[in-house]
Image 1 (cartoon, rainbow over the protein chains, first blue to last red):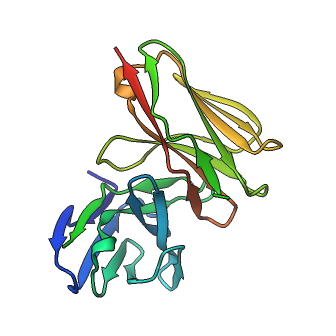
Image 2: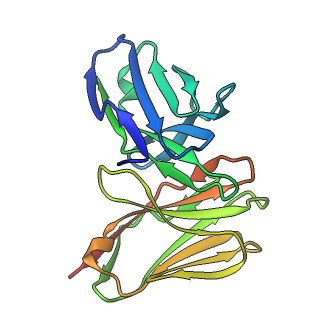
Amino acid sequence: DADVTQTPRNRITKTGKRIMLECSQTKGHDRMYWYRQDPGLGLRLIYYSFDVKDINKGEISDGYSVSRQAQAKFSLSLESAIPNQTALYFCATSESPTERQFFGPGTRLTVL
Amino acid sequence: QKEVEQNSGPLSVPEGAIASLNCTYSDRGSQSFFWYRQYSGKSPELIMFIYSNGDKEDGRFTAQLNKASQYVSLLIRDSQPSDSATYLCAVNRGDYKLSFGAGTTVTVRA
């Protein structure tokens, strides 16, 4: 069974729609992250959470929001999707103290 | 200046050869360093991590770290077609976040 899961795996939506991407983990890690990946730009951090009560903005948080419902669940929302949010989105968790990060399978989001 | 820089490639090597990938970083206070392999359309997979200056070997992979020169490298020995992927360098500055390079694409030709 996968340690970090993401739903949905693929999503096509229209401009202006609200979208939620969900991430669940069974690794027991406190720290969770949301990244987006665009061709040639690598992975960029959107939001991160060190525990249920701790939420932090990453380098590209505008247009996104998150919710940490439990230690194991971290959701990313696009309140009003726009075409330049078309990307591959990854959730990750990290262990302490090595700080190694483990990624989910990704969600491919297309905004038309 | 980007925090983490890698040559984008593609780096083409013959099967059985050594592939050498380089990564430089800008924050001298960076503490831990990671190499991820990513196949097209898939998620990054951790293959090596290194914290101290010097070499670290794991199977066909060797990571090398030189903090004074602010670079970290990855050697892939006896390259196989299955090593064809994009390799991402990631650096942790000690604040529990990773900064990623854009990746180097490696193609191993049979």
